Length: 164
Image (cartoon, rainbow, N blue to C red; front, top):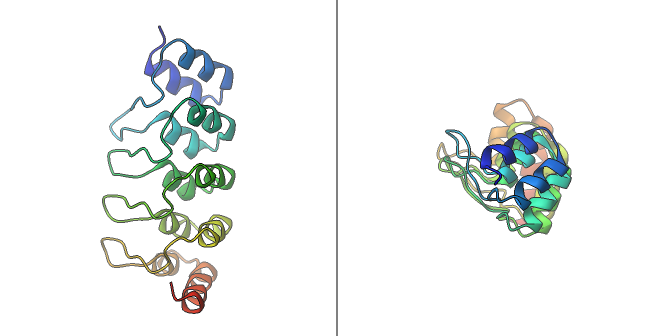
C-alpha cells in the first residue's frame, strides 16, 4: 500500500512512473501535505510537471483543489510561470477567477511575478482584470508595484478597451 508521502516524493522528483505506481498502489490523488496542505496536483503545477499533472487529473485530482490559504493549482502555476500547466488546467475547467483567502486571483499571481505569457493567456480566456485583492489592488496595480510596467499597461489598456 503506497502512502501520500510516496506520491509526493514521486511528484517532486518528476517521476511519472513513480506517481503511477503510488496511485495504483492506493495513494490518494487528493492527499494533502505539509502545513500548506498542498495537493499532489498543486506540487506538480508549482514545479511545471505537465505530464504528472495530466495523469493526476485523469485519475480524479480536482483542478480547483485548495491549499490552506485557498490557492488553487492554477494560481500556483501562474505564480511560478508554468505556462503549459496553466493552459492545461484552464482546458480542464479550472476557475480562472478563483480567489485565495486574501482575494488574489490567478491573474494577480502571474502579474505579480512578471509572467507576461500567462497574463496574456488568462486575459484571452476571460480573466477579470478589474478584480481587487484584500488590499484593494488590481492585477495592474500589483504588476506596477513589483516593477512590471509593461504588464500593468497591457492590463489597463485591455481593461479600458474591453470594459472589464
